[in-house]
Amino acid sequence: MDLFRSPSWLLWLLAWAAGFALLAIYAAARRASLIAAFGLPGTLARLAPSETEGRRWWKTLLQGTAGVLLLLALAGPQWGIELVTSEASGIQVLVAVDTSLSMAAEDVQPSRIEKAKSELALLFDGLQGQRVGVIAFAGKAQLVCPLTTDNDAAKSMLGRVSVGMIPQPGTAIGDALDLAAKLLGRYPGKKAVVLITDGEDRRGDPISAVKAASDAGIKLYIIGVGTPEGGPIPMRDAGGSLTGYLKDRKGETVVTRLEEAPSVRLAAAAQGAYYRATPQENEATAILKQIAGMDRSRIQAGSANVFKNRFRIPLFFAFLALLVEMLIAERDSSTSLEAAGAPDRRRRAPALAGRAGALASLVMSLLVSGCDLPGAVDLFRGNRSYAKGDYEQATGRYQGAAQRMPGDARPGFNTGAAEYKRGRFDEASDLFADLAQSEKTPRRIRPSSWYNLGNTRYRKEEYAGAAEAFRQCLLLDPKDEDCRFNLVQSLKAKKNPPPKQDKKKQDQKDKDKDKDKQQPPSPKPRPRSGGMSQEDADRIMQAVQEKEQSTAKQQKAQKQGVKNQPEEQDW
Image (cartoon, rainbow, N blue to C red; front, side, top):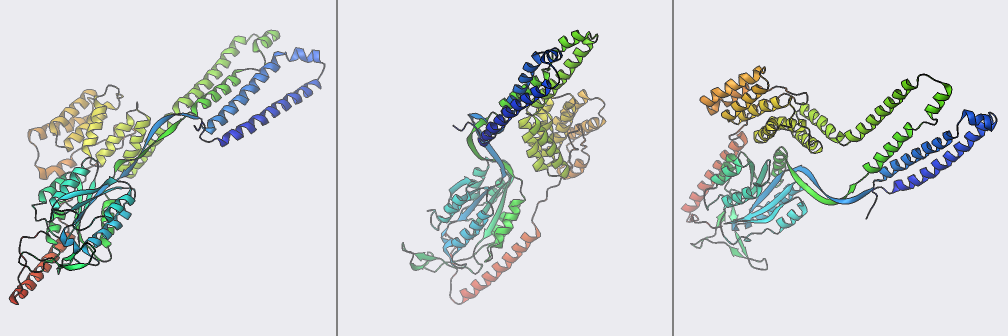
């Protein structure tokens, strides 16, 4: 077992102990020679009692012991095992790859499926350190690689994806989204699904699955692979040699085309984005930028068994040795005072006790407060991040302070304020409710906790709960006029709930205030944007024009005797 974390300090300890011992012996000899030069031994014995030398040696021994213990603390003694779990902020991303037969078409080089894997490999390279997974789908969806932070393993599993690996034919986008929502539902924060396909879902209506995923906080990004002109689907034998092209039930060669309009509609319904695969693969970079702007959740990065560091034990005894050394006088003050006949003995004794007591109090305060010092630093840094508007970083700082200062209510209160600023009203409501209802919360913080709980519930349109919170705030602080005003507004809203479209106007009346020096003012709401972007609208128009051109070509070919493919497609 490794008894010391930094054993190199033990060499310095030995060197220091030897040097200190030699210096103490030299100092004693030098002192004796200097004293002998002043007079006869009998005379000097009356001026310097024999006990003085013994006390001086005790002081020297305590000084040396303290130095040894300090160097021992620097060496980092450790014993006992503890499990340490590290956390990091991250984003969960699932990629869904279409493996239907149409993905074997070679209208993009080398083929649609290989182009899809190239796009996703580039995407994985930009998601290093994030949790990623792979889903393959055709007529049915199947998990190929579960969510993992090992991007190399995910890329290896992605390389094994191939056309026909799902035996059920078709393109079931809805099934892939349902499976992705189920896998991502266990993680907090924002999630993303990157879906790469060449057609629309012919197994059902995926809109319901898209809306369910969007409600669960999942962003959808779709990459369309292929060309509107399309191409035939090659058929190959076990050796990879071309044996022909896929034909429909009437014996005619199937021509598969990229259908973009359904994919654009799905992306718009999920408030995501649609991209067409290009040779430059710029769409992967664009998706990475979109994902980088999402809120990150706390994920477990890893865990390990480590030795418990016990440096505080020798450090405590080192301070104790120095304290005792300072309390030992070189002469017996009572003996010297009585010999001199001094009348102020009782005045000097309390002064000595007062200095010793103040020193002991200072040392013990340093030892005790040292345990909470990291928590206070996290709280200070969290307030600084809050003032800069970086509420995500502020939340992480406050949570770290809460772990280090479990008995302090300030980190929890400030975490609730930061979550409120981020629009995460459920988390803020839970934090403020715990503080407001706890008898351990300081009295100066409880009214502010009820007040902020009322504001949070009001934002969640829980008007009855908001009114009750403001009422509790007034019971604790009857002079709070802002709380009284908000109570009236909550009761009005409870009786006549405002229409949904007036929510932004009502939010402007919501007053937030600073109830604690550690708590900055509460935020104003940020309206969320929705609907279809101009970029998506342009893509829809482009897809419609290409569809019209394709239809015109089909009609022209039909006049020349070429029949259109049937509606029953299973590729």
